[in-house]
Length: 242
Ligand code: PXP
Image 1 (cartoon, protein in one colour):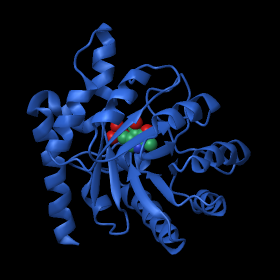
Image 2 (cartoon, rainbow, N blue to C red):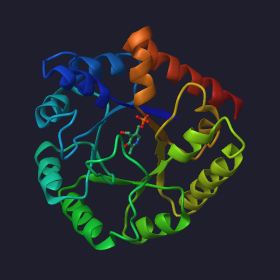
Image 3 (cartoon, protein in one colour):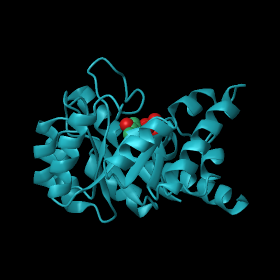
Image 4 (cartoon, rainbow, N blue to C red):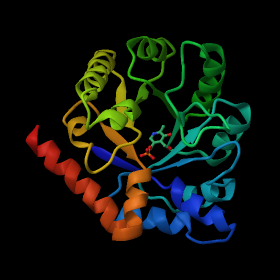
């Protein structure tokens, strides 16, 4: 299973002082050298962490894959078309939220999403949609001709050590099974940590995880390379158990 490292919080720290360190470009290089299979950034409309200049520089230096998380807006479509990330992940966005909260409601915003997806695909860009583990959402993605989805593991991550964990895992498992039958490429992420990633890795049809906060948080004690290596190692150990 591949690991995409989300480096947004390197930029969060930089923006806290409006300075030039720490640099997301350094972070991307270190994460890749430590084994990351891809780098993810979310260029938010409020530019609270990653800036367009970061996207431009990262596009040039990333050797693995650049995943751009983006809101369903034409402003973001224009930016994606200009910088051509390897994959665009559509996410819901609101200025009040601390981080992405919940998946994009594809059923509700179908027309807007179709327009955005149409523009991205016409330019040859791969598109994934971040959705909650829900069969209706997967069906809507499939009908739209989307070939990749990222399943939101946030609810599971919040409940991994209490009695709701089995219920949350079951929802993810069911969604993964359904998406697999639809022949979709399946990614997953949100809230994953060294402690809770195991049962997600055990779902063999998930191809890639996107993990940010926990890796960056641990990097302040371990260094970024070791924080990435540790996550890769835990994923590998759990894959061997499958
Ligand atoms: N996937 C998506 C779509 C996200 O928006 C985020 C957070 O930016 C993540 C994965 C990673 O979540 P976390 O930072 O909690 O690991």
